[in-house]
Amino acid sequence: MVPSVEEGKIVLIANPVSKSGRGAVAASEAARLLRERVGQERFEMLTTAWAGHGESLARELGPDVGCVIALGGDGLVNEVVNGLMARIPEDRPVLAVIPVGSGNDYAETLGMAYSVPTAVTEILRFQTVRADVGRVNGRYFAETLSFGLDAAIALDTMDRRQKSGRAGTMLYLESAVDQLFHHLQVFSFKMDVLGAEPGCAPHPEWDDAYLVAVQVGPTYGGHFRITPKARLDDGLLDICWATPELSPMRALALLLRARGGKHTGSDHIHFRRASSLVLDFEEEPPAQMDGEPVRGTHFVIDCVPDALTVVVG
Image (cartoon, rainbow, N blue to C red; front, side):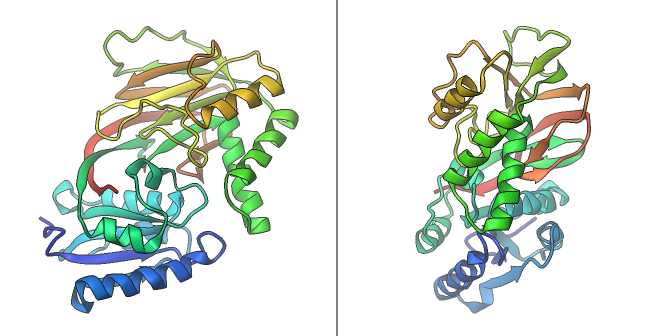
């Protein structure tokens, strides 16, 4: 059993290269503030040195840790969540996030401030909720799993960010325009919903879609509210898919409307809510999980309810 967040050790896991190196500056500031507020004996900072390092650091936290803070983007959050989920439920410290990434969708869902000093203050209030976690083929995701167009945009945005050092919504929109007008594809998929919400209509065996998103929280791609009714604590995944035929201009208009969750009335946009499902694709689509690439054509997906305790802003 982990100690309480008020009494246990606080560990900051930081990605120093997040947001083109600004993570190192943010980590130094957060560490200084946390040491001042809780004391040197209750604080430790760990930094990631390679992709996936955050997972092993979170998995190997000592029994005296009451709270682990992920400082970075959604990719680091994903690593830390997978590390925590490798521990038994009674041995999972509280998770907090200081957003220093380009998308920060999970931090947005938690309502965390983007200022490091304000985020530290919010974390040390230790206002917590229980949160669900998604799982796909044995791996966990905190916020989003998506296939097709939006995954291609997310992965292309990540590639552009690494090459240019830029970040933010405009970079995402640049990639979106390029994908919509030059690489728009339709993917055939089969969705077998195993734990549908009561009253949910059955889905045809096979369908065509530009994208399929499976969400724990409401946003992806840097705060696009693809499933605006999604909640962290309802034990259900929110599924959204977009069907043909759309011109690139109409698809772009729908994407822009999704920024504020105003795309839901379109005949091309469909929703389901379920605790578990299986997705099969005829050919391998672009796919991402919390911003990280995923490969395959067969995906077994479910919601792990009340999996973590998380700090909210």
